[in-house]
Image (cartoon, rainbow, N blue to C red; front, top):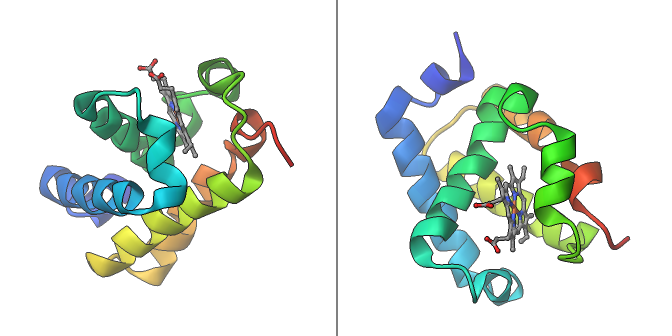
Length: 118
Ligand code: HEM
């Protein structure tokens, strides 16, 4: 079954984005990154993040991700914290451990393109 369906289709994906989004905004270490980004765009950012986990590189390749994040100075620590929130969000909505592992593995494929500070 496709990861998208494993998550419960449109409804499951929307629930996952909402949960993830709330966690990102609640984390003082992360919220500041999006201060100048409007909430609509921030939500669409979280959707993109999850889309990589579900669909992978055919949606966003490493080169476009490198360009989109160039100069932001995102660190490994910030990246790890973001992945942690996605993982917690998916766990809370009941995604099983095997699916979660696949999602995280896909997200990790973008780390090298996005992180600039080690
Ligand atoms: C797989 C993980 C990620 C994906 C797929 C992703 C996706 C994107 C995309 C598509 C854009 C361009 C948005 C646009 O031009 O409208 C973007 C910009 C941005 N991303 Fe990410 N991102 C990821 C991880 C992160 C992380 C971990 C952070 C740091 C907390 C971050 C912070 C930002 C910021 C601050 C922008 C600029 C927003 C703006 O000024 O419009 N991203 N990201």
